Figure (spheres, one colour):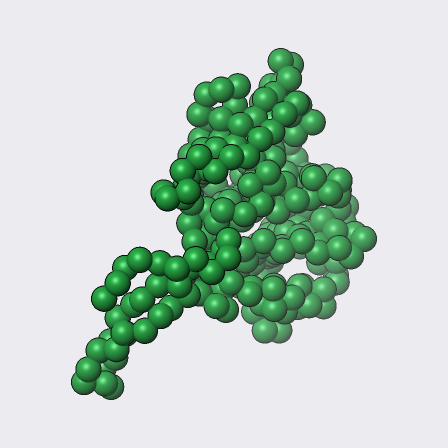
Length: 246
């Protein structure tokens, strides 16, 4: 059995695997498509700020969104460069230079009065399922999308739910879309760590097909976010600020 993968574009690779089934007496060897994962180092001012493991795509958006979700103002980025520093080991560096006055801010309450009809939630979940191309192929990604008040939708898939959210935040910022008038839709569960990103970004409504944790619910309530979970089929739960759902 060979373990050497064959590249199939920038997002998946083809690998030989062993297929074992209770119904079959003999094991089978076959090719399978597997999603890629890379180490991405974000350097700020020449120093390593963080290491992330994610799909090696939309790396500029990743850096912008990650810094936003850490409390930095993306407009303070004076230069941003992406380099593949080690192709064999799937290693990338994102070098970010901030203006001297760049400071981390504390999160603030989301005060947007945006409201949506329940039918929009059902439509968004259907779109999220349709947009999960890599998930359908590999089963190895989270799917995240944002819908703004102009009707534009951005889709991101990633092996990391945190990086997927960062990338969508970065896409919104890069395309100059108002996050305060956008909805975040995800296939992943929400915890305090993902809710922190939502709060710093300023999404007023967050919808997921999965469950939130207690701390995610507490934070969403404290910061004025409408948190929807278990949005599947024709039902969903609203955990906080249900006044935004008509």
